[in-house]
Length: 196
Image 1 (cartoon, helix red, strand yellow):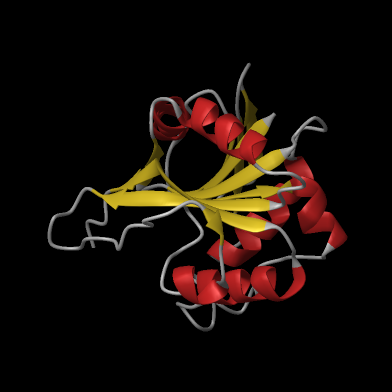
Image 2 (cartoon, helix red, strand yellow):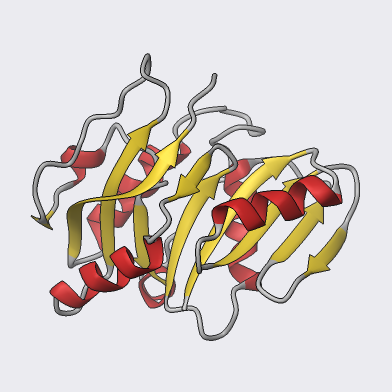
């Protein structure tokens, strides 16, 4: 199973349900909604965790505790990121290309023509420098690799934290330092609104 963890802030129940229904595309979405309450909303194909803590990195780390047991791969999304319609098929096909793959970084497309994202031009093994300026939204990672190599987001970095930027770059750098068999794919997996 592929699970998508994504974060948002101050959404009501209807807005949260709309978000998970819009974005999951045959993955199991877990939405972390940072708001003024603590509650869970469980649907047939999603989980919404409302909590009063703050910080994207903290939210991503905590949501790992809510993964369904049969989750093999994970993708981190923000609320302005959408998976393409055939995302699950793309992920499965790319994983099956390689032996012992721990992570694959996919192409991302910006829907804001004033903020383009550099494209990945080829498939194959990847080095950190190739994606150091990207976020984690194109990264599909094996849950066993997260556990085995003890990967986590540095909670003092990212929106809602002491240092409001840098969490994705730090996570990616740690990933490439610790985890073997990381690949890239020129397949487009996500679209990003990038309004701000």
